Image 1: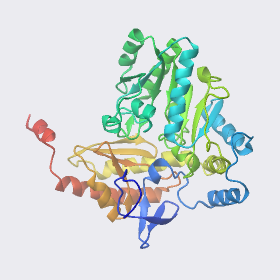
Image 2: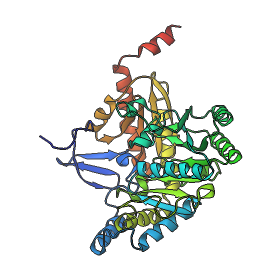
Image 3: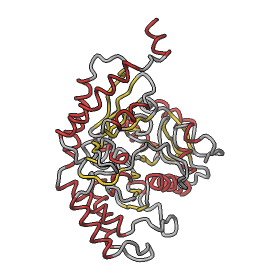
Length: 403
């Protein structure tokens, strides 16, 4: 009997080693990884440059403390400032911590402007984390249920609806920020329209709100640019990062500039482990390798090949709603719950997952090649077809067809 707390419905497989985009279980079976530890393993597995850098760093020093200067942290911050276009970086250990820091920045910004109870606009179906503040910001009752009372100060609107934001702006003078995932990951790969992001930025500028872009899952090159907001040609005030930032070493960052620059001062926020030398070595090595191997261009090329391949392979298949996404962040929505596909794919040596009950989510390592991308399509498309042909058509779909 395991003493690990039962908080995950784990799949019955344990991986013991990896190479590139391939994983191997205890029996030696090979799996093609199209999930990357949920958008974490940017450089795949056992990337020689990352292995060497981390090994050398472990031999020098893993942790000192933020009570002292950490040169690697300054190097990592410089690199993040360069790719985000922002000015200050706070390092933490996870996405929820980065988002928690963003919420604190927004509240402090509001207090400095004389607003006693600052409010933040958030989106339906968003996911920002599982701490009490970030699950309150999250647009999922399933995540929130059983943890009430929720943290106050969040105003929820639909994604891609500028008019809803304008109405809030007119009637709620406590709003200090808009907090958006430009591509909602857990919510089902829901993509913000670029004109919507530009419109949000205009509203923020007009009202002197912070524009906060949660790029924890969708950022760091996954869409073919470093960040989704760069596709829209805008500059946020706050950008939380994590997941792929350290290629598997736990690290998060809350990056600020614009109206948010200088809001946090000594004593306002902290983290024991945040910015430790091992994590910073992972950040520096990951970002440098991404640049040298041109992984942003690769993400766009291979991601488009996967998405277009799935569209072609599933054309005319009843039950497929849409294949959508940007770069290597892809969702295939079906018209019925499809969690069973995960186990079928696992049995056939492919790692994917299902989010929002009916969306197959693909988040491959950014080092995946076009050949390996085609293999993802070749393995997944037949599984989807078989599932749809064998599983019952949902009652709502039958009713719509009857009308």
